[in-house]
Image (cartoon, rainbow, N blue to C red; front, side, top):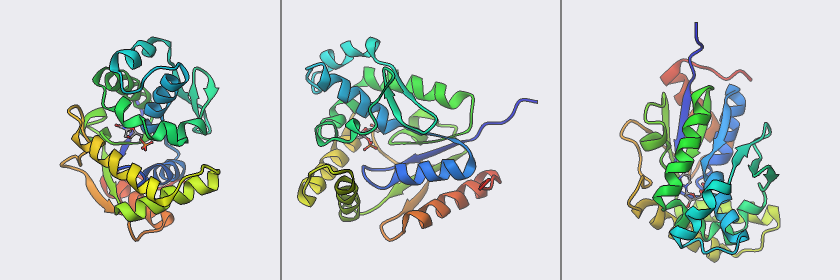
Length: 227
Ligand code: DC
């Protein structure tokens, strides 16, 4: 009998801690983790590297045929085989990725890749439109939020740890700008799926957030962590 694959969709605004939580949930369930934001970031990086304008749809779309995005077993992001996991977190990429993510042809190409990735295995996929558009039949849908202040502090501390020079004000402004662009774009905007469970992590630690998602997964599917 064919094994049933389970999809866990985790959506929410920038810097809500989705990727850290999603990665750990995937580890605990032995599912594959797919960071769809990293894919939009990889296209943005490719665009900047090629000297193209990430606000110009024609220029950005012209790159698509020459771009291949994959994740290795450790979850690192590969752009045409090169590990770009660090470069895609640089402020220049963060400041431009919303423009790229608002372009319909780019979204259609990446969504096709994302659906293929979830086709043959159980996944935890995080992003903005996973529960509403990419995997509308996902067994579990979580909409993870946190206040702008909490999110800005988390992203600022993450940047500090990675040695990326930014100020808290700069990070808060970037979070607000991305919230606005992500939720006001015409195609597949950021919004909770009607059948998603809202998880506010403003006052939750990462471990508590992970446990909360695992409980939701268990309630919806009966699946428990393997470790
Ligand atoms: O989660 P993140 O900050 O790495 O996402 C980067 C950008 O990509 C962000 O502006 C939202 C966008 N994005 C999107 O539009 N759809 C997704 N499924 C994932 C990310």
